[in-house]
Amino acid sequence: MKESLRLGRIAGVAVGINWSVLVIFTLITVGLAAGRFPILQPDLEPVAYAVAGLAAGIAFFLSLLAHELSHAIVARRNGVGVDGITLWLFGGVARLTGEADDPGADFRIAAVGPAVSVALGVVFLSLAGAASAAGLAPLVVEVVVWLGIINIVLAVFNLVPAAPLDGGRILRAALWRRSGDRVAAAVTAARAGRSFGWLLIIGGFAIFVLGAGLGGLWIVFLGWFLINAARMEEEQALMGGALSGVRVADVMTSGPTTAPDDVTVEQFIEHYVFRNRHSTFPLVDRMGRPTGLVTLRRVKEVPAERRPSMRIGDLACPMDEVAIAQPLEPLEDLLPRMAGCPDGRSLVMDGPQLVGIVSPTDVMRHLEMAELRRGGLEQP
Image 1 (cartoon, rainbow, N blue to C red):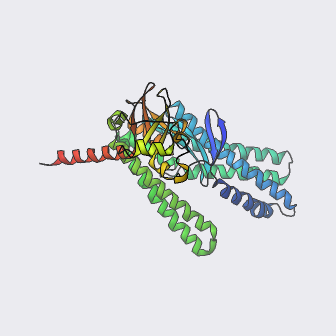
Image 2 (image 1 turned 90 degrees about the horizontal axis):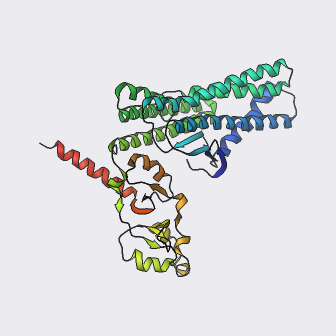
């Protein structure tokens, strides 16, 4: 899930939000301010309910952030890279750029999130008890009670043994430890996630038919998301298994054709696009240092009348947004970074020297060749 706004960094981890977070934030805030709080604490001013709902909504998302931040911190301590955290419609996601080296690390990374949520739930409920004993306003107590309950509910839901939930990753770690086969464990957890998603869709539809309204449709939507996310996890697991032991150098296109970043788009098309069969070109400065990456898709978006005056360097994806790899790096570690890159390509650097480029086509060709080799070996 891509972020729409970068909020900053916490403990060295980039934190952002997706625009969809406004939907669930509004639903929570309005639901509490117009529903739960007036029922439990009637006859108060509307502004009191609004402030309480807003405070609860903000505190809830801070709790989600703590949950995801715990995943990120433990992942880094176990040697797994972290690209950042994004809060969105269904809570939050910590974007990891690699995989755990062993089942123990996989378990720790997955389990810490629900553990933090349970801890927050206990803390909030304890604070609610203390606030009530101290004679604080009942509405304040209700806000803190709700935060305690919702954090425990979040933990319990995440512990369902179905990927991509944390419980699914815990299941993956347990199966991995028992069988020694990470790919098979990940596939089983993903398929459990798809089954759980269908259960949510069926249950949500039944709730809707019985008259619960939007609550049932929300569960249906959540189930649909889980099914798709689980399917993606299964595909990634199978691809990771096929790419196990493969290095970036094994699939990269060596010696890519580069172009100077100070020529016009028209000159670039005439002297580089028409004279080569490539769809992607690294750009370099006068010293030969890479400055960006440009694809034919980007070039085609430039109107013909602007091509004689626009520099190709102004059109390119800048280096800080390009995935950079090393020749001996495992290819499966690079793939998540490529997926997060705007153009889905990676430049391969050997020190300061540009030695290759990796595209999705390179990866798919390697997978197809590997499949053909396996098929050939199976022939009598």
